[in-house]
Amino acid sequence: MNGKIAILMKDPGSAASFFDADKISIFEKNDCGWELMSELSFPSDIKTEPSELRAATLRLIEDMGDCRVIAGAKISGVPYTELDRCGFSIFEIEDYGPGLFEAIAEDMENAGAEMSLNEKMISDARPIETSTPGVYYLDLVALQAERPEVSSKRAMKEFFETTPFVELHLVCGHIPQWLEDLPLDISKSETADGKIKAVISRKRCG
Image (cartoon, rainbow, N blue to C red):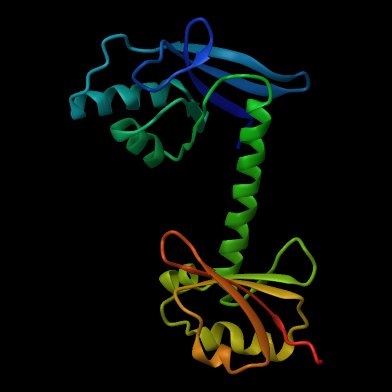
């Protein structure tokens, strides 16, 4: 994130959807906080025919320069697709007000940290320690999507044999049977998309 956020606005100053917006206000962070840097007039006759809508969206993207974060009441369909394809981080917001920019910036920072964690996890093909000492994380679904040759044993067997840990937070399609046979406490829940989220720790004596 380069410190710039674009907001879809409708006069006199409320957040708007892509099709209701009057303008795009671009804010930039400086030593004094977030300040309005520029405003782009929104096409009043924007068309809903896909090819014309795509062309209009691409013109707006070009006019936004190096800003790659945008927020509005609703962004969907062709505009969402083109913004996403051009590398924008897209946020849907209920209203425009104090604290919005820092909330978006914090979400971006957290997403960046999670992305870095996932990239290292995939590169190393093993659980990665989080910012909490002793707590590790492995998304086996994401890992095997990128590296299908990596089995659950290859990703985790050495970890359980050699790594002192407090908890392993595991995302998987199912709990591998060989894990069930180890002296581990495993608590699990199912997500809305059918994945298993498990918290794994070593069994305590007594």
